[in-house]
Length: 535
Image (cartoon, rainbow, N blue to C red; front, side):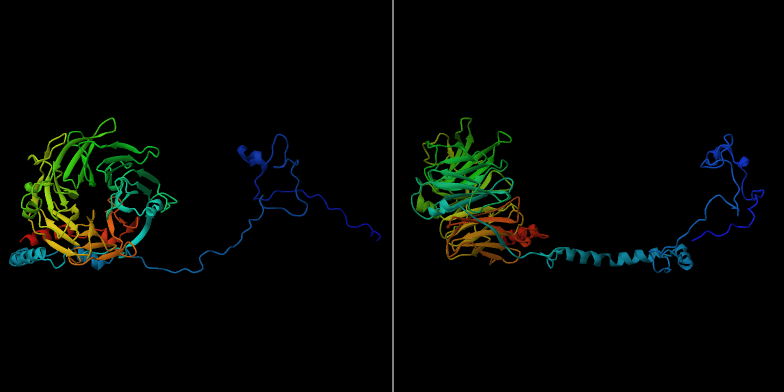
């Protein structure tokens, strides 16, 4: 394409440029702003230093900045509306409020004096009424079920047909121990038995693999954890010995023992208790009870021996109000099968004996026991009162933790007796089983609840607030009719109850809130039960 002819238009003349009125002359710019508009001395023409200012060719600008661009965007609120406020003041209401209230004080006084006697009478009637006894506002859903959380066992003991003779919770409430032996028949004094422990809070709990197994040369008839040292547990043997184990020592856990001496029991030990040492604070002593009729208190020696500190003996001739025992036994010893200390007086305890009686005893007794020789310390006669007997040997007694005078007993007649220490006759007699009852325990948290272990393989839970004649719940512990020999409430984790049976198994039951949450006026109900039965 060829280029066109040259333009014939004259060149654009160079007009004289005059700044518009809106443009500030350079000389008028304040000194502090000159760094944005050039250097006058250097002849700079602008911010970019392009030289002297040159007027534009075809148009002039009235400002030094570009046009401001604006953009509209949608708001997040699509709709809007008005709402009235709540603080609008009513002139009428304010006026009424400011007016002085007129009170007829004389009339009010006359009215109060006229109704005072009637109101006081009704308030007193409501206070003494029993219409709402046992009523409680239930803010939470009640759980009425009782669940079996764990079934624990030691297969080696079950292979020997050993039975669970006792269970005990440690001081933290997380570890349970059981003793294995025989309670039905046979001479097992030379047979090997075991003590086993399980930590229920341990991850990976194996119910058939105890955390600790201690071999014992004689059948273990009873055991009890130390009240404050979680690893110490004491046990009574069929041989009459008393042994203390430290479960934190896996190699040689035996730390204390009585050995076979003249002071050792000559019959099996069926009860062992830790007692506070009255002479040495923060120390404890051990108490043991046996069917040889002796109740012995042991102190610790540094060489690992348990040495007899004091002792008691039950002789029929020295037991008050027990004519049947005196005729049947004369001056013979009365075998002790169970023992429970008062929660209100550390000197008072109750024992169950083979003759069917429950006896109130006292450690402050000073009367010497008759015809008890061969002991390194004098033995005393502790019995103060004999209660109405069961139809056979008493296997278990339990003092109430909520009432100083109440205790429970059970025995081979299948009955539970609720006794007051202020009278010989039972307040309540409950026929629970056609077979033996082996153990009874008060709840540590519910004043009106207790549990009993039966020879028919059941664990019965009683709530006297519901019924004084039948169990609130009965749990089947073992298949068939294998007896349940022992049970213990957990005083730390109060929803747990452990029971051991003749099959060699321990079941840990989780109690519902009905059995663990104390109700209003429950202690008052218990006190009234005791006082009404005595009238």
